[in-house]
Image (cartoon, rainbow, N blue to C red; front, side, top):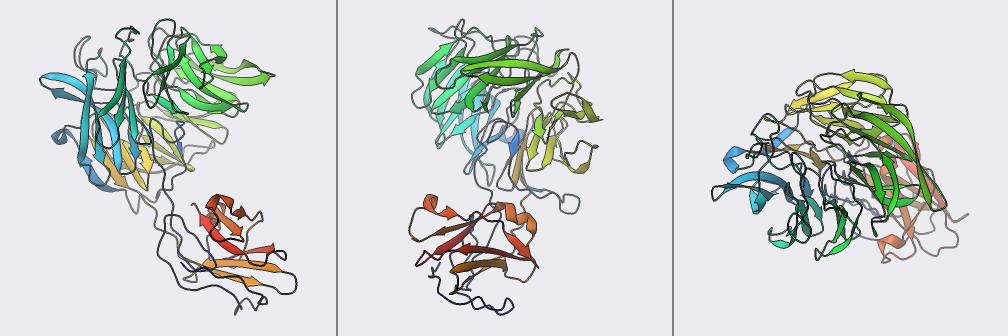
Length: 540
């Protein structure tokens, strides 16, 4: 890419401008940059899907995916199942780089074990597999019997952080694996001495979370059940509190400006300081004596929680005065709106989720007002699957393996499209990254291409007035078509007097972008600058 110094040319006629800057198109880049020259813009996917329920652990993603499935269905890139020994498991999927991680049950030397596997995201080929202990479960999903090897396999999802993969098995082995080859960097068996933890019915289903160099879990060790381990070494950093474990994965959050990790334990909601384990606040919830499996949902200062088996749902408000937290219950529906294990997502004041207990194949998708838990609408036939919010669309995986796209609106159920993706039982959530959906069932794993075609190339033009030092930055589609105004929220115009300065030091021009006849304009007064470099970063 060539860089050009802005000159003192006058604003010219818009139809035939006198401008400074090259007109040569550069090739597509994952992050589009213009510096007084013309390059191209592409949809920017990037990032990872590091663990259970996505980048934020809240079931939301800013990924851009294609939604015209009726005319252009998802394309199956690969599908792997029993012939590849990739079955038996309710574990969801984590993705980092070109590796996909999940948990399966395999027979090794005549004994069933839980195994963490890494697959190539391009081909689905297995890169490595690491056995992590017994795969033995209480009866679940109408398969197996108490004490036998049924129950459909591992329940928790690996968590990726850098070049490490963290796994918390059904029988409370917390392990750190090398992401490249799967070798065990460290492991802690919490059921062995000195911890002597115990499992609950149906064993552990909660996934580990990683925050600030710590791996945080409810280890169910008597009197010190909430625990944090050094992510690099596996040494215990803090532990405490006698809040018995559930199947619910804790969530990272920030409430009233304070970072915290929120557990849904048998005692209720417990929020702790992630660095020290000190309790910040509690809110008691009646335990159903059977299972709590969905995670809390945080929206502003509100926290929603729910469980099956006639528990129902509640919403609390968290507040803080000085250093003291307090909670107030603002909505409660005993026996209603039960999120058995499919955690809802929050969007524009409403919760969208699958509600019901053991309503396989029939459980409804509902929309509830968060602050009152008033039902806005209900649609039957989803079963005990999972729900994500991908940008501004719901992506629901039914327990029978259909992927359903829905417009989230409180007015009415509005289905966009559906696609039969999987066979087998799907009691988890997919992963959405790089224009792809990765989903799994108890029988197979599938990779689907739902990428959005790149937008047209952009042409940048820079003009500078000798009268007032004002620079006009103008960009438009190189093919002559109008720029879609929907692209503007993802565009930043940056400026610097030194083209070699670090990216973080470039200043964003705080100005409303103006669009006229499909061309975008931005004016900047720069009389004090002897020279000025500009670039545009687009993150669709």
